[in-house]
Image (tube, rainbow, N blue to C red; front, side, top):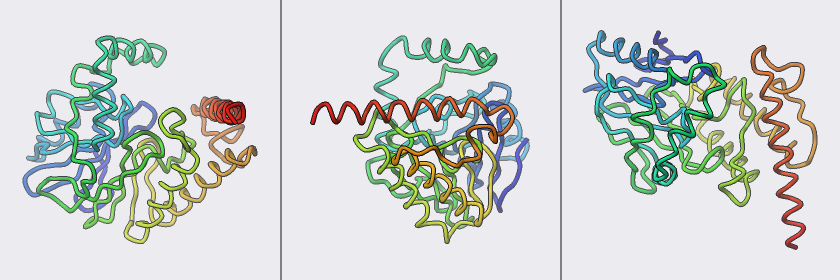
Length: 278
């Protein structure tokens, strides 16, 4: 079920990890960002668009994680864009013939593996490096690329609608997940990305994280501050005072504490490795 959050901007929340697909209405059709996870959800989304007399004229994947790279045949054959870095990561991963099989195996514990269509996964058209706007006949949609969560990660600012699509940042259920394998300084990359988002906050009335609840302008600034505090705590080796980890975690999301512990461990290993090289 699509839910309107601004004029011509709608969100569909998946049953899996509160994943958010975003639809932006344009003159000739719709822009679909991170279209969803399960087969029946994307099929339902396609039906809703069809019933409203709209087709998908462009897609966009905010970053190269499998759950943001999916597609359904019923959504059509519109170009599916990503940043140049995002597309390069996907292309490299899928050059291995066993990549999709490994993703399917990874999904087995979720209980919905058979509901996740992998046949059209990752068929992304790379936008030229430095592209500032989504190339489509609709509201001006600005690309805010950074390297915080993943290489080639991008948020989108639908300027005329004052909507920020944040990708895998600014979640109320997931802690910031750093790109600990793809960048030399994951802490600074994340802080830099938060500064970029903070820099456009005055032009935002509502934002959509990749996972979790949407929010308004005040909540946007609160989540930027919460994520910054979490990342700085990691940097300083402190336990974060964060409601997303520990006993205060939302029911069903207790596993996020394991994600946090894993990040702490990997950052410690990186630090020791750097000291050894020194």
